[in-house]
Image (cartoon, rainbow, N blue to C red; front, side, top):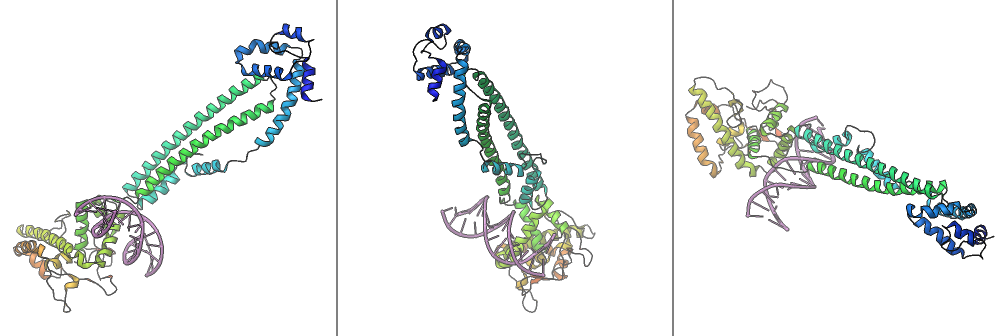
Length: 428
DNA sequence: GCCCATGATTCATC
DNA sequence: GATGAATCATGGGC
């Protein structure tokens, strides 16, 4: 027996418009068979109506004596349909995209147990950004962590909202289906399936949330990682300080750790930046000494003038020159570098002839300064010290182009360290 | 937009 | 780990 025939037999025929009216149904029960399509349409029309509107009709239908028969037939049909649909839609494999997003959020410390606001990722970013654990690195680190924590918070708050909405909607639909199951055949399995569909829908929304969170983290990371490539020129004063040190220790431009720290402090940069600067400077100076000649002379003159000034003051006070620690005019006589004296004399390691005699090579632009220096230093006892003592012991780049020297790195202001101490200045 | 200066990074070497 | 050398990437002058 086919389904339509069975339903027809079960219902005994219900005319259009009578399904909701028991009297009409009763009247028409004995009538010839009706068009089954019309009957089904009626039933479907009821389910399409709002709950309130259809309440009376549903009640009538539920009370109909033939209802159980109709219901069982519908259930049978439904079961067949559901089985075929289930075969198609169920058992979705886990979405690889979601898995990727989940893994990433977990790795970044956004999802999963809190790792100090994603400290691992933050540390990685900070390490990449800093190089040294200087103040800048610290700031970037905390900044990164704060922003990551913010992302994490937003993510969890949104996730919670979605879950809540999902739960509410699921409950609502389940209640609705249970209610409707009194009128039309809805099996618990079907309800389960509907719940699964809802969950799938919400999980796709969740995926969007995860995606945008990942994007936010990526943007944050790239911003902090790119920061290491950001270059800001040091300010003029910082460059001057570094250059002064470099040219006043030209024979051995390897500042000690202490010197680096002091330079860093004075230039308001990190020790790493000081190291970078000296690394670059040494290389570039060596590569093109000629180009840096004028700059070397300028800084040497400056240093020498400062030194002479200090010396003059010391002489006038009839007391020994006292090293000071300022930056301009700060170097003690012991640090009036070789380059200073050399520059005053127009000396550069490359300007010494074979006999070690000075070959004057003062840039014309520097002549007035040198003249001034000359006059000034002649008035002082320091000049004699500066020009006649062994203050300037020319060092030169050896044939292998390295700073061949028996000297050791200098400190910025401190007197020469004990012999053999690494990074102490004995060049002067 | 090109070019140069320069701070930062990477990699090899010691 | 410090350094040299090469290289990258950006800022700034033109």
